[in-house]
Image (cartoon, rainbow, N blue to C red; front, top):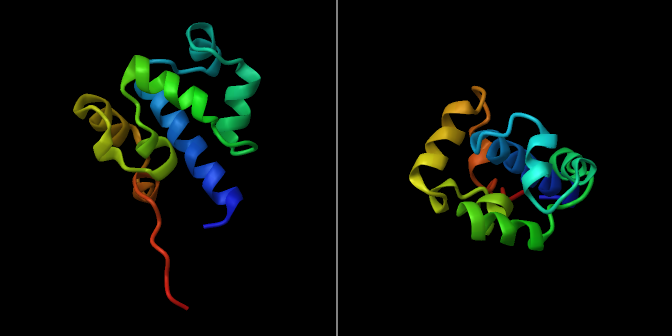
Length: 105
């Protein structure tokens, strides 16, 4: 997977997480987490990668794992949060829930 796709996938998972935690808008999350709206926007759009320090904060306070944000392993999340993320995902976005597999070619 190229870097741009990886950043975008991590950003999508961050957005899914934000919404599942009950923050429908970036400004809502920015009020309680150590980040700005602009930073969240850049991370969620894949302009830049979600920094490990922020994922560490999410893990410490909300049990959001590195494996989920960076690798798409939904099974590493608390059961309730994983179910909420799964139920909110639009049809056809199952690929966001796991790391794409490399194809020989």
